Image (cartoon, rainbow, N blue to C red; front, side, top):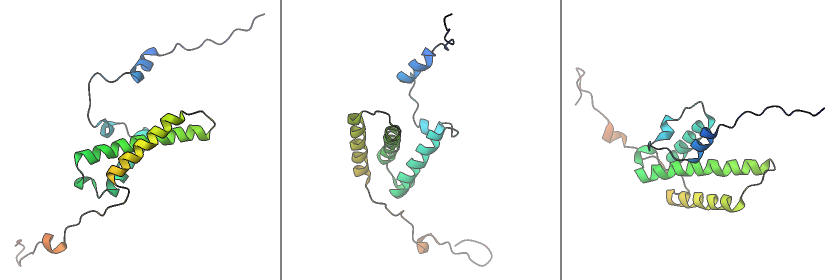
Length: 137
C-alpha cells in the first residue's frame, strides 16, 4: 500500500504578486493609517516618535527631517529582523545587512546622534495678565 500525502492548500498567488508589486496608487503617510493592531505599525510609530523627540520634537522639524526619521525607523526594524533571524540560526545576506547598517548610520548622521532639547518659550513672554473683573490685559 502506498502512503498518500495530505493535500496541500493551493498557493495564493494573488497575495504573493501583491507583496512583490508596488501599489497602483500612491498613498502618502500610510503609516498613520496602518492598523495599530499590527505590532509592526505600533513599533514603527513608537520609533518615529522617539527619533523625532530626540531631535527636539515634531513641531520643530522640517518635512525632510520627519521623512528621514520614518526611513530610519523602518531600516532599524529591517536590521533587527535580520539580526533576529541570525540569532535563531538562519542565514542572512551579510552584504545586504551591512548596506542597511551603513544606510541607517548615514541617516542618523544627518539627523544627529545627540538628543536636542525642545525649545521652550519663556514664561514671561507667554504669561497673560488678568485684570480685576475677569478681563485679560
